[in-house]
Amino acid sequence: MFGEIVAVLPARADDMARLAILLAQGEPIVTVIGKYNHGKSRLLNELIGQDAFAVADRRETVTLSDSVHRGVRWLDAPGLDADVGTEDDRHALHAAWLHADIRLFVHAAKEGELDAKELALLSELYADDARSQRQTVFVLSQVDQLADDAELHKVRNAIDTQWPGVALNEVSSTRYRKGRDEGKALMLEKSGMPSLRAGIDAALARVPQARTHEKALLFGEIREELAALLAAREKELEALRDTQRQQRLSFDRGLAKVIEKVSGDIETMLNALGTDHASVPDTAKDAYGITAGKLERAHIQIAYSRACIEIDGYLAGQGVIGLPSEQETVARALNTVMIAVMGVSVKFRKDLRRMFCTAAGRERMQREFTHYYELSNDRKALTARIGRSESAVDASKNASASLNAMEGRA
Ligand SMILES: Nc1nc2c(ncn2[C@@H]2O[C@H](COP(=O)(O)OP(=O)(O)OP(=O)(O)O)[C@@H](O)[C@H]2O)c(=O)[nH]1
Ligand SMILES: [Mg+2]
Image 1 (cartoon, protein in one colour):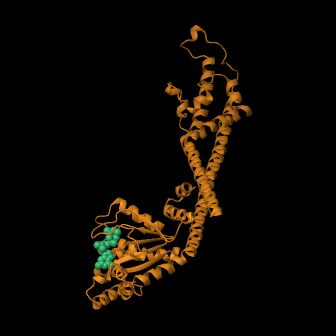
Image 2 (cartoon, protein in one colour):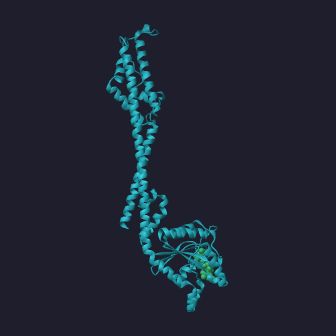
Image 3 (cartoon, protein in one colour):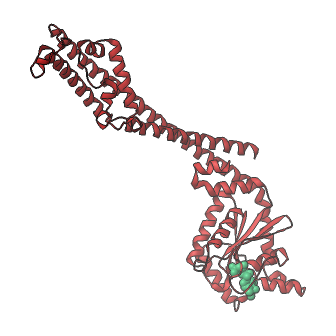
């Protein structure tokens, strides 16, 4: 089902993956995004009140890990770091991006302003929020590492210049832990963690409606895109079929004209002939002489050849330039459409009349040359293209049907 849709709209692979996650209706998912060592894992631990995730003073988190806590799935992701990031990292980050309803964008206060990568990421996140109603929460972490309030002030101003009006959510995980361990309410409060947690809870409360919105958005966009693609593909198929019909029509007409012309010529020639000498047998003494019979046969043969050359010229112009390979024989010289249809030679008037001067004869030529026309390379290529175009239309229809079925069950 998903595969059918993604095969038709590869650029929607992520959206389809996201849709699958939405349809699974799991717990709301919160993840962290930010550079490594900015305190992401620790932040999650403090938020859920459990040491669920590994924390270390180095590049620590390298794969996705999750922990479900009171109806929320918390997803710890690796830090962003282009220099040491591995393929697995990117995989994990991508998965976190796909899964999360709420993204905590973590930036350590001691780093000062945001770097270019963080800024780019932040604008990507906010743009996605606007579209999908997923939510990004900025977290200024490790504020205890700043020397004093003046330092903090500087950082605040710097970031506010970069992203005016952003709510910073200043927190310190260490202060929070200390306050909790030592039962110091003021320190707990000053850690910023309770207010961040309240903010996240408010965001969590919005997740169901956001998911409903996102589901409808994705279904709607993909449905429209599939419909547009189907329409385009049907149009292309129709155009190809039209070309096929027009080409054939024009071939049929042209061929009929040529046959009419050569038949007329032959008829005129035959009618102008006198006594038929063709069947007067040659005797031994005529072996090297010219006889009336020989002349008659030569005459017939020339008329026949002329007709063949004219027809052949027309066929060549229509791309009928040889027999289809499966019909070829070892006798190379005989591998022509003319010989296949007309035979090797014609010696008698009655044969010429039968071939060119009867309706049945002309119909046979029309039919058989048309047969070889359809087997010519260009026509076969066109037929094959139409076949591919039909498959593409079918694939589009199946994808639309799959999407409808998914939407019906959603
Ligand atoms: N002083 C102080 N240190 C912190 C705070 N939060 C985290 N740390 C320390 O910073 C280091 C990195 O913390 P992690 O939570 O492992 O950082 P991370 O962002 O998950 O790092 P990666 O998983 O490698 O991306 C650890 O030594 C933490 O103990 C904080 O609020 N204040
Ligand atoms: Mg970590």
